Length: 96
Image (cartoon, rainbow, N blue to C red; front, side):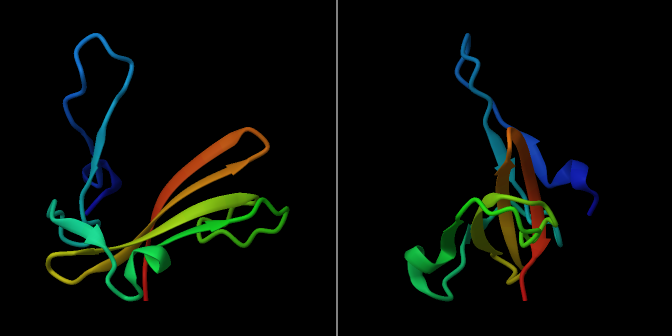
């Protein structure tokens, strides 16, 4: 699946600047995506502190939030939101 089908916009509140996005499984495209059950809710969402190392799964520097997800078909992936010195990055990477 190409990246254009992974994050799809949903309807937002009329007159609002809020824009909501639906995350689809990058492997199969289905919308039934939940937090990974591997370690409970607290282990599925992890905040990594702001460092100047390139340790993000996206290959970026700085702090990031990782949310481990699994689709209804069993495909595992992580949604990453990162920030380094004013630049924001969003990505989806396979989870092994």
